[in-house]
Length: 89
Image (cartoon, rainbow, N blue to C red; front, side):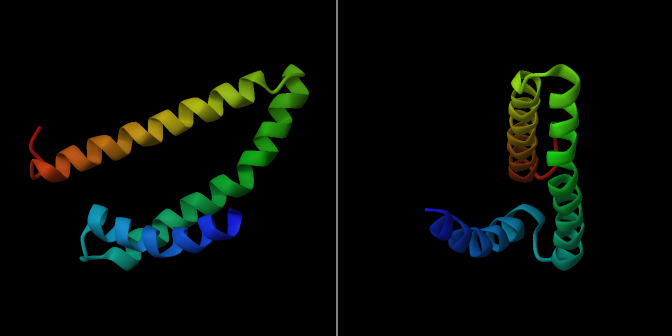
């Protein structure tokens, strides 16, 4: 399952990025996205471990992860609506 997921992720990521950002400056925007994802991916486990050490439970880590995921979904929905309306509120 992991192989299938990672195999599909690469082409779908490019297609979604083109849909979300358009073709103008796509490389720059995807580069910035990759930097943010890399820094977050590197810092996330460290911060989760530090939080576990401070609190003694994974509850706070899991709640924060769920809230961040919901926030990401909210941003994607807002971006899609803005694109559909041409940027008008």
